[in-house]
Length: 142
Image 1 (cartoon, rainbow, N blue to C red):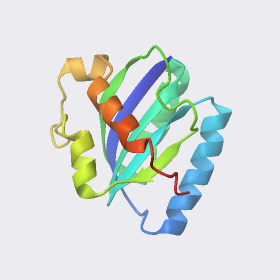
Image 2: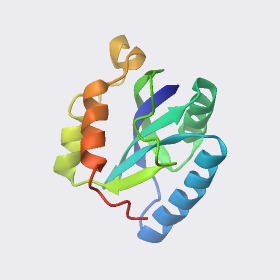
Image 3: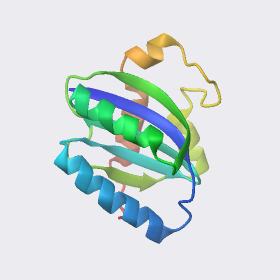
Image 4: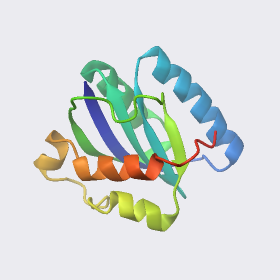
């Protein structure tokens, strides 16, 4: 099992209808490729965890990096995991207030262009725990 966690800025996703369309298509694609994870949205900022085989997760991340709806893609974590943290969701989704989002991503400096190697090679356990805590009790809105 493998995971990649990233942040990006959205481009052109301005309303609930566009977001629902993205979620519907993405969930179907994730199910097809046995990818699970969590997506958090705050304003125009995305943070997502992708879980699955290394090959599938890496391929999905490459697709995301090339998607014109994403800019400033910043990989926060990339490495092996012992089990899925979001096994029940092909893509869980929850919005976050700016304060909640800052609390989740506060372990990283997203404006920094080159994160230190330890962040990229080891699971970001603190952030995963915050995401799991945040998502537990959150209703998947779409």
